[in-house]
Image 1 (cartoon, rainbow, N blue to C red):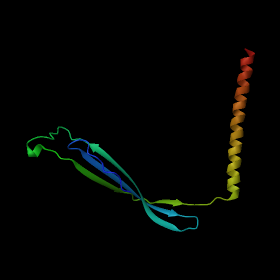
Image 2: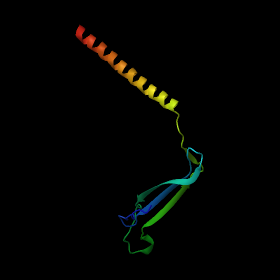
Image 3: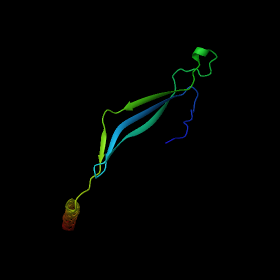
Image 4: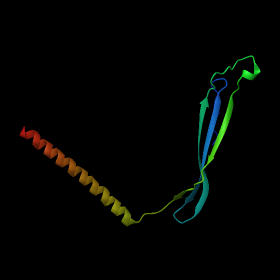
Length: 121
């Protein structure tokens, strides 16, 4: 993907670009795999200390520059697509419904006890 150019906002600015690449394998439910790469990019801007950007002496004059850093991961990420059975779906649904009943039971008990304590006073 081509991005817009990064504008240099100040004279003698340094742009440091970072690229991280991770080998990736995507495996679908039928077992077919595709090898690819995932990447992320970032950049930082730095201004030099004690710079004289408009100095008349050539050795003290600074110009904009850029630096690139590549990091290729030694590990591979594998994404596997898998299908769940109807039994697993029913078990997870029962767990969610049971959890909701438990939380509402706890809240109901706390409210009942709190209201009972307030009515005694």
